[in-house]
Length: 417
Ligand SMILES: Cc1cc2nc3c(=O)[nH]c(=O)nc-3n(C[C@H](O)[C@H](O)[C@H](O)COP(=O)(O)OP(=O)(O)OC[C@H]3O[C@@H](n4cnc5c(N)ncnc54)[C@H](O)[C@@H]3O)c2cc1C
Image (cartoon, rainbow, N blue to C red; front, side, top):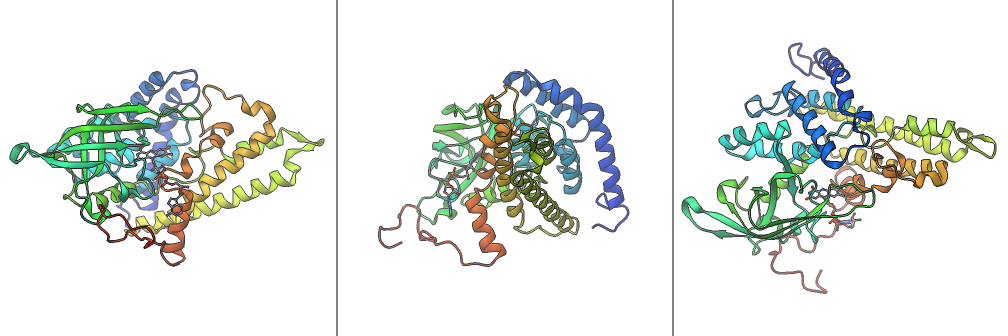
């Protein structure tokens, strides 16, 4: 807790900030959320999302923690969390900016030259220009440092640049992105983490091909991106040559504390309870059924736990400390709970649960919440989070890493792992 009465994170000032945000959202959000989105196609919903983002920008709610010189609001992490918590109560079209404003743009604001920050910050925060994040590849997801997309030096002096060749996978919103951040291998002769570099890239550069990936629930976010002799100027490098892994991890760490509980990610437990209350099993309310009661009770206990972990992380941040790896626990519980509760809700609804409504979304409807496991994959799979918890919270021995310290272009010989 911040005790200084003039500090924006002082509890009273933070409460006043939240109250203003609640009032502002109540006034504006309904025109952009819920019923306002029903029946909209992709382009229309995206346009609504851009309009919402522009309105937030005009009122100091876009890029809350980023400096005002780059279009941000110059606020604190706790103010951003307060606003996001309130914003997530509405079903707003913010998803198109979820990657852009959470990771690439803040890292650009940290590493890019001043002129680039001033030029590219405001259009990104206003929602005019979306950024995507090209890290994962067919052979590199959890083990990001195993990536193979390579960049070779091209030109010198003022024309110094890099030629990029390779493939990225699972790139969210690549089809609407104007810019990208990308991690590539610039030196295969050193250990895998040491040979990577980080760039930002204009998605209109010749040689970039974006292909969409069809998803079970019809979401249109995921893409594969092919890079064929793509030229990127050396002036678009973020961080030193060989420091790309560090910048990538920093990028991924920025949004660790955005997830509070299921709101914004899945239908709330209250919706599950009212669904159960309205259904009968063997002549009695489903709420009297042991299985439903136990799933509901477990959900409530986990939610309390997640909120407590969240509060501890906020206290640590308010005191100027870095929150610990317990954020992994929260994401792990949230992803699992979403599918467990949704599966049971579908059982309750019977065959009608299989009729997927065109406007159904994982944040508001049980069937898409069950069908979409992305919360359990993106930002660290369940298994990787369990490893993190085992190693960093419980202090158990590290995973076996046979390629540790070995040059990337010298694979581990069979039988010697
Ligand atoms: C909705 C969505 C959006 C995404 N958006 C982006 C994006 O914008 N940009 C981007 O770069 N990437 C994005 N990703 C990719 C995401 O980062 C990867 O999917 C994730 O890192 C997992 O990597 P992978 O898919 O290659 O699986 P793998 O790493 O190949 O894992 C496969 C399986 O092996 C398990 N496993 C892997 N390593 C271990 C281990 N050490 N111990 C135990 N089990 C292990 C995993 O848990 C998993 O079950 C997105 C993914 C999703 C689902």
